Amino acid sequence: DQAKAITAYQNQFRVGGTHTLSTNWQTGADFSLTSIDAVKPVASLSYPGQAATGNLWGVSAQLIGTNLYSARDTHVFNVSLLGGPSYHGTLLSYNNLSSLGDKWQLEPSLKYYTQSSPDGGANDIWTLGLRATYRVRNQLSLESELTYERSDARGATTVAGPGALSSAARTNYYFGARYEF
Image (cartoon, rainbow, N blue to C red):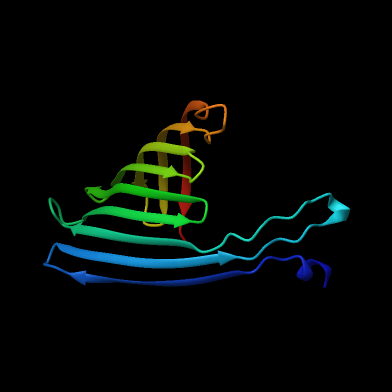
């Protein structure tokens, strides 16, 4: 009962759909609205609590192309607008899945996300990725993914002037195997 008393509840509404334009092209769109209740303070853990999020919304549109240059390629162009009481963001992305013969699959991706807040803070993030999958047997695949992310952030504006600027770059790599039962 104690855990239940301090648990924040989430409410979410989501709707979306797709529409076929031609044999190789379709469009998609979706809308979501989410809110998360406040988390009450927990004195025994010295946790001060957390305010409710307010309404967080998102609207996205996709253009999806299939079999444009081979029998098994997929292209997804996406535009998403996101927002809430403390931020507004825009995501632009492109994802591709291409098969090279029966054994290889390549998935390059490019994403740009920008976010701003009413207090003058802002973030810009570029992400470039490449995932490769090699099917050793019908049930066994080797997977590898390399991503590079570059972010630039500006802190909130204060009476002393504009916020501090910071930049970061991250590179992630993984290699693994997947066995399908």
